[in-house]
Image 1 (tube, rainbow, N blue to C red):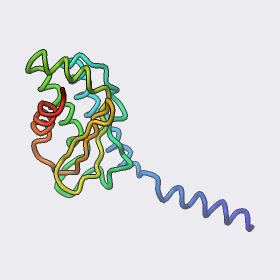
Image 2: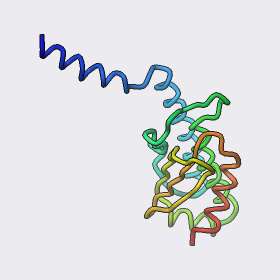
Image 3: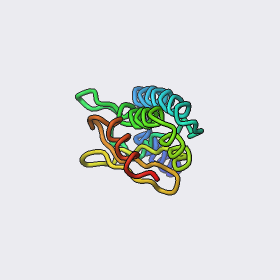
Length: 146
């Protein structure tokens, strides 16, 4: 009886932290949307950045808010902005291809979107509801990549 109680406590706590079916669906849909834009960006930038695993789910408190802002939108527009930059000219295309090998989208920003280049990974710190992510991405990359 004592062993059963311990197992129940351990399994019970594991289940409490598991995603619901709806959360799993939302994450899967988000991954597909981001993957589509990363594929398009890879084509425009002539890069081979990983198309999956872009969203750092551990850093997001929610996937969708009450205004229907979504983690997928917050992240996919980064790839969209990068693709737009690369479509602009060959210099941008070559610079992005040289400097950025991976994209990581984190939902840990308390305010507006911020960017940092950690080695060859572009780390984006954002949140639900940030506006003009694609333009802000393009601007930041234009000013900060060499």
